Image (cartoon, rainbow, N blue to C red; front, side):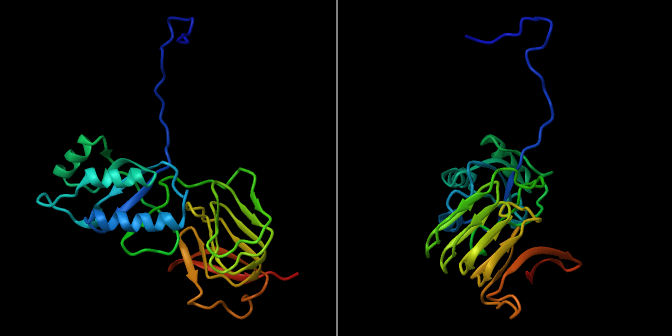
Length: 254
């Protein structure tokens, strides 16, 4: 049975402005099969990263003209199979925009891309940006893991901090939208601020990571840590400067 307001003089609906967090898929190729393979690989390494998030398809980097096109039907199908919901297109020429509107997409020319986010190891075929609205500090209770993480294991704290009370072995991966605390050796990958939270930090009792990343800015073991932090109690934060953002890794003194 329908619910109806007893006062018939009142409107049966309200129209209000609203904000929606989006991610932007910045295309660098029109080869949909290549994109599908790259996306499947990245999301396979970070399962559950996207949970039916709305996405803007950004074709600006492709430099398409009126005589060039993109198979949007196949592309939107690939995105949906990977738990992304295409809602808009950005940078499309009129013919492509008309095709996009026929598929239910809107003109997202005003969408602003702020920062890249890391899914796992950075890939060259594509870039995924952070949501178009800044993400607040996670408000949920931290996810706590009390057992060592072995190679191949992955833990993702969506929308909150992650606390690991044991070792993160090489080949294991810890991801959080907020901070990451490892009360043991960090020898695997640690990705904090996964959805663009630039205030996120990483803490470890033994800092020996394969990869550390905050809000898309990363550093791998190919670039060794300084001696004063390698294997020591240390923290990682994001430092902004005239040359852009970089990771600041400092020892924690007792």
